[in-house]
Length: 380
Ligand code: ADP
Ligand code: MG
Image 1: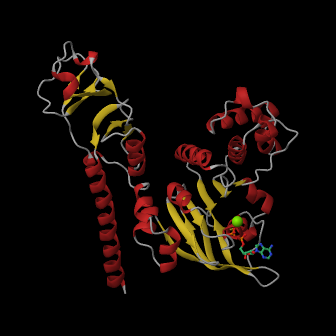
Image 2: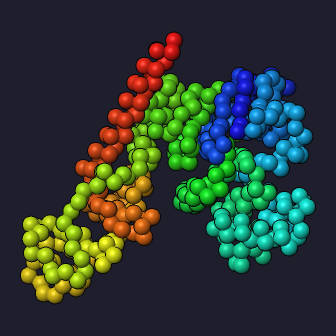
Image 3: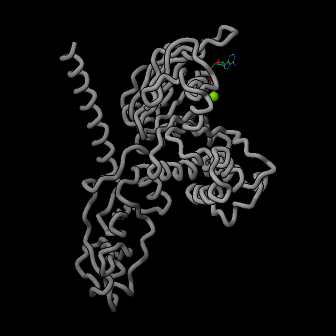
């Protein structure tokens, strides 16, 4: 979808911001460009919508050399979100979002309707926020409007330059999660610039790690963390990359343990052997848990003594979320459910299983890398 071929950008003062860059981004892929300040990320991005022209090399969008495309036409196909969103202060949120479709000739009423849909999509209720002015929004809300506006003309490509860089860490994480959910729905081809390796890892299908004006490694997050291509990348991703790896390794069904299970209307279990059982409702959905201690000498049925389960996650959530959930609820294990089937209980994740899952993912990667090395040797 986007292809760079030997692209170099030298500014008038002699600074080489981007040096002989070649890479390709597939349709529907989200690629994060990460690196320290001044390494050429913004320059790379602005060359895609021709806010900056390369000194040499070519850039293709959908197979077409963009230097032959009228910049205005080009930009209609590319949404652009930056840190300082630049909303019109005297226009409402709804009007801000409707600006682009309106400029593109969409009728006013229709443009507003579309804008309302988009606000909804980015998690802003149009009824509540549509009539507000930008200054009446929080930083995070403004960024959401920025994303909605960038999507307004339904462009196939999104360029995002540190869009969540100016909001506090808690809001940033929420915006990241929302954006991921949104991206799963809209499947744009996205170039996302950040200087934050955590953000790059969390969002990217692949990550381009920038050194000065060059890409040092271009791989999926797990590979960048598991097998940094150069000492520079290793240092950039940090010594705690094992921890970061937790956030890119999903909980799989095979990781789970199967503890004893009882149902709400069952008699109290007497054979728990000093342990506990998971409590399910009639549909096999997670309800809670019951300890051997509680079930021991009591009367009644399970329902009367079950405790609510707060430490749970859907399968596919990251091991990092699992770890955080255990800590948050001071739980020795967490329940894992299948969100697709309305919450059916699948099993529990224990710290030992979490550790095994992490090992599995590191080993799988090591095998992958070994195989690639063999493939390369066979080719050459
Ligand atoms: P990043 O976005 O990774 O922080 P930039 O692409 O903005 O990096 O900048 C890359 C390099 O190019 C830096 O050394 C920066 O100072 C330089 N640079 C950026 N814009 C200009 C410009 N208009 N003129 C001269 N040098 C520039
Ligand atoms: Mg920049």
